[in-house]
Image (cartoon, rainbow, N blue to C red):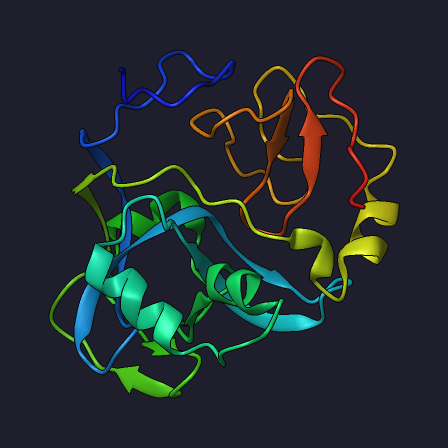
Length: 207
């Protein structure tokens, strides 16, 4: 049986176990040891609707190691129906000053990254904190109940008239969805959970 995830999007679906060059940031996450953490989508803030103002990156859980995923899951209180979404909404916040994202990968750090749960900063004055690095594609982005996110209905209302274009970039933050798995004809953005119908580009409302 092939390990290739089923997908209708993107030029080439990724192979589980394959190596891919993906963006990483240097941060203290998920434990107290500095790691290179794979990230997905552009650096952004969510002051609108979600009311999260710090500039941040979302973690690309397709590429984190099994140990990093286990450590992240260990931070979540047990017995909560919301727990799995809580894991995949963890982010890496950037305390660096405003930087042009077009040249982000070529800059040395002028600030620090912080892991949100411990608020413990990582000082890295002599090394780049954003790099393109090889990483193993370890898992399809997991399903989780994004409809439980407290701001989901308001976010869906705000983007109800938007459409997913042929470039497969989420209208919310411009995240490239082309490497993700198509499920029931839909693509779900892992950053904030908006789901789009591939055939029509229309938003698929949550339950």
